[in-house]
Image (tube, rainbow, N blue to C red; front, top):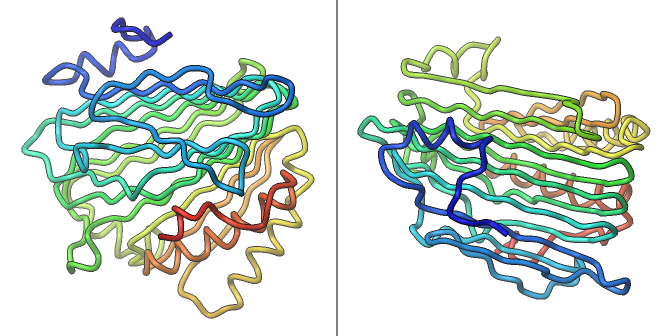
Length: 293
């Protein structure tokens, strides 16, 4: 159960907030021997979850931020647990928006636990960082042996359609993947005020306005390195202005995209995800209908 006592791993985050926690969400999936079902749900406004039926997975959760976005000082905590032999997908209603801050830092923390025999996907709708936003996000994923986890994110730097680029503010995005309770991989992304040159440099973002990442954590992850390269090479040959790359570690694949056009990146990540989930997870080669709305 998720109660009003903040887990010890989040105490340091909460201490930096200017006001109490504004959103909490805990979702637990279990398997009764026949199918995956929702075993527990705890939600505190503005975070909510809906559970529509979708042919692409046994159980789906759609996370909604009823506030319409995140402002400086907001604190959101999400906890998702997948019990043994479950099959579930979690996605968002729409891209999360991180608004301009007057100085306070928004704190977002997400923890995902995947038990043995489970297949779990966290399919991104993405996050849009407004110019002047200040946010720190921590993602911790615990995957048990024989568990399979496919997780992604799309980060768009500014309201590109409005002609706005992210040039000032602060964005820190931390990822940690644990396997069998041991830290397997960590990645820390941090950009701060006066970042214009970083976005322009060829050794930096090379004028890219969006970045994507996909993490596949499973016992057999390195076996799909060549398959992943083939899927990405097909994207590289279609003429879109998106750069891709993949790295293999023990029990982990890390796939990255960098693009000057967020729409192209979303298209490429979605196409890859659809094909990849079918190859490695035995799922349908398609995405949930809500992801295409």
